[in-house]
Image (cartoon, rainbow, N blue to C red; front, side, top):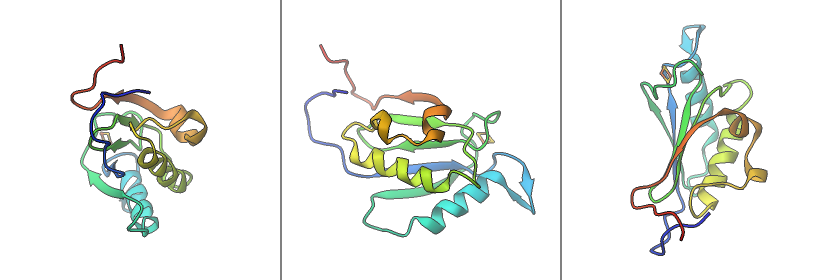
Amino acid sequence: MERPADVAPPASVTVFVCEACGAEQGGVMSGTKLLNALQERNTDHSSGITVTGVDCLAVCERPVTVAFAAEGKWTYVIGDVDPDRDADDVLTAAGAVVASPYGVPEMADRPTFFRRGVVSRTPPPGWEMPT
Ligand code: FES
């Protein structure tokens, strides 16, 4: 994957998690359960990974929905994330996004939830197709 020649994007990513997704279990929505699991695990402050809850990512029929977004990188929206199964893999994928210069992890670096759940990807502003 190529991008216009300029300053390399920062080695960071924000994982947005829809807190409103899914069914309520014990008074907690599935999305909130995933958000809590990610925040509990994301303790390495040098990782460049930030986890943030949002109200809705408009992919309500595929709970839980998350998005990986970073300045200068492609944004991926991913559905069908299971809070009981995928929390560790979400952070693994976030690390792969951080390591990728354009936010497009190699297929081998994409956990199963990522490979199966992609809803969309969007280039960063200013992106130009390589000529
Ligand atoms: S309720 Fe989660 S994407 Fe809309």
